[in-house]
Structures are given as C-alpha cells and as structure tokens.
Image 1 (cartoon, one colour):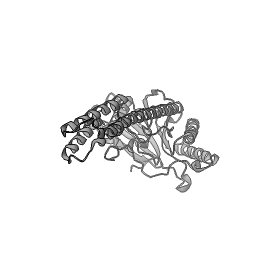
Image 2 (cartoon, helix red, strand yellow):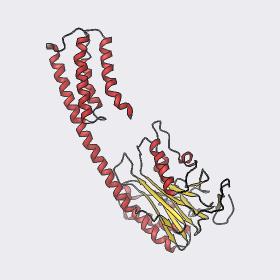
Image 3 (cartoon, helix red, strand yellow):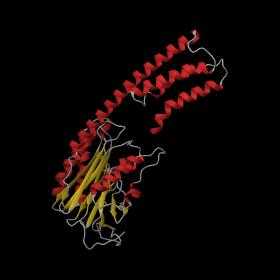
Length: 373
C-alpha cells in the first residue's frame, strides 16, 4: 500500500486545483479540513498531524492566490472547523492504532494457543525429514481448526492434516479429539481404512456431546501412511486439498481416485473408505496443506495456486520448500490471509544413484486390488 504515502498530497493538490478552476464566489476551502480525517486510518499520529498542517498551509495559500484576505472575518468559522477536524482526526488515529494493537495481540494469543495444541513434530522420523508451519489469518483473531500430526508406528509413518469447520473453543475441542484419537489409533489399528473409521467415530462422538448450532462439526482431512523406506504412500483423502509431490522441479498433485465426504459426514455417503496407493521416487518432498493456502486471493480476487511456485528447482529440503511456499503465498495475498494456514512437508530418503534427468516414478494405484489407474 505504498500509494497511501502520496494520498494526503494528492488530496490537498486536488482541492487546490479545484479551487482554482471554480468561480471566485465558490469556496472549496472546507474540503481541505476533511483531508486529515480521510487519511487518519492509515497514517501514524505524526503523519496525521503533518497532513493537517500541510492542509492548513494550503488553506492559507488559497485566498492569497485568488487575491482574497486569508484571515478575514468570513474565514474565522472555517478555520476553527478546520482545527477541530484535525484534532478529531488525531483522536481517530489513536483509537484505530489501539484497536490494531489489540487485534494484533489477540491474533498472537490465538496463534500461541494453536501452537500449544499443535506441538512441533520431530525433524526426523527414521529416514524421513519433517517440517511444519502454521500461519494465523491476518483478518481473524479466533483460534482456528487447522491441525497436523505425524507418528512413527509399527505399520509405517502415519500422518494427518485436517481442517475443522469453524473457529473458537468448539473447533479446538474437535481438534484435540482428532489429535488424541489419531495418536492412539495410529499405533494400534493395522489398516488405514480402520484408522479413518475411528476418526469418523470420534468426531461423531464430539458432535453428539455438543449442543446448539455448532453441534454438527466436520473436518476435511488427508490421512496417509508411508512405508518404512518411504517408497510407498497410501492416502485416504476426505474432501481435502490434494497433497503435492515435488520431484525434479515439478509438483504433482496426488488427486484421489474416488471423491469422499469429510470426516463427520460419513452417514451421508458410502461406507467404503477409498485408499489410493502411490509409488514414490527417491529424494522427493511430500507437501500437505489446509485450504487456507488455495483460498488465499490477490487484489483481483484470483485464488492462489501453489503448483507453479513449487514447479521450480528447489532443494529437496522440507523446511526450505515450506519457506518458499509461504513467502510466495504472502506475496500473492499481499500479506492478508483470510484463513489460517497449516503445512506439513516430508522429505523422502535420497538415492545416491538417482541422478538428474530421470523421470519421477509416480503412479497411483488402488490399494484394494493393486490395479494402476
């Protein structure tokens, strides 16, 4: 918003020119008094007062240019109004600055609570490297419902990223329920569909225990399982944005073969739990994110697409990948996110013989019969 720096000068100059172009008996003097009030929401206190002083000088110069007396008896009331509005603008500026500080503090508290609910996972799990990020929405101060989790289990490395409908304490209760259930069930349930069913049961238990308008919560989610060597990925996508697989400067969306309803809405659809199986290349990076990423808009209202930014040569380092993605996201949205953003990236093991120029071996297969689709 650099153009705001020039807004006071543009307004003063505009009124000055308007006065020169109108008949002498038409006074646009009082329009200058409105300039400090108009710019007060965006400038500092010093900038607001300086704008008022500059507008006052212009107000003094206008009569002189037109051959009138600047402090004649007919100008006493306009000048007193001018001074009053400048003081009012300074007061508005202080009130808005205090509101911005309070909102910033509330947002920081919400983000701190969210981070406490979502403790950072270890940077390494077996041969895998892990990175996470969480960004609170710039237009909200409520605790969001974004969550991620990753756990080493006897069945491989299991992970989840999800976005619970709504914000506030109700959403946090659902987040805690899903996280607790995932960490427990991931260790004991041998198959991925069974894990998804247990998460579905848990969110329905939370809904049954709640009363009021927020009693029907649901969550979009990706629940996945990586084999011990990182070569095979099983994914159950519950109406969530598709994960991206980064390899050799290209980003491949891992779209589900069969669409599914979010967690909490299983009663409305098929009882089957579709699971897709992918054969992954060595040295790739798996990126999962919540819909705050793809719902971010620029000043033209265009949604953000992470694929072009990630389809460039990037070090196969999850932390570097997420840093580059977030930087590009903030550039696209001019730093204003409408929804919270949670990201999880996993770096797969490298192969010393996997030289440049090889095509990535990414295939999707149905987990139940092994047929390629």
